Image (cartoon, rainbow, N blue to C red; front, side, top):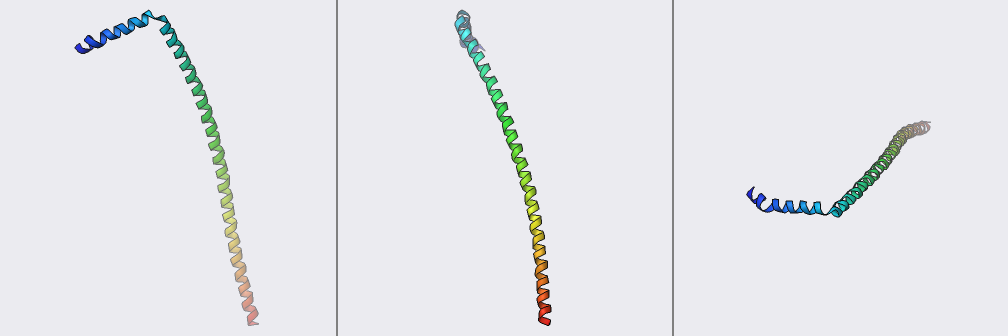
Length: 103
């Protein structure tokens, strides 16, 4: 605490006195503060807009993926039924060939 009081405190008092004496510095700091607040507001709005666009894009892609998955399931089911039908017809052809050979 003695070190703080001996070296730092005197310097801080000097800086505070300089700030009180220079109103232009305070005005400049206020202008910079207003500019930064405005910049923060602009960044917040652009960020929220970007988030909204990203969410919409994600939802759109998710819906497309759901549609593609449903379509793929339909194609798989039709392929499976076509294979069963092909196997059935192949067996029928083989049976007919055997019957023909017997005759």
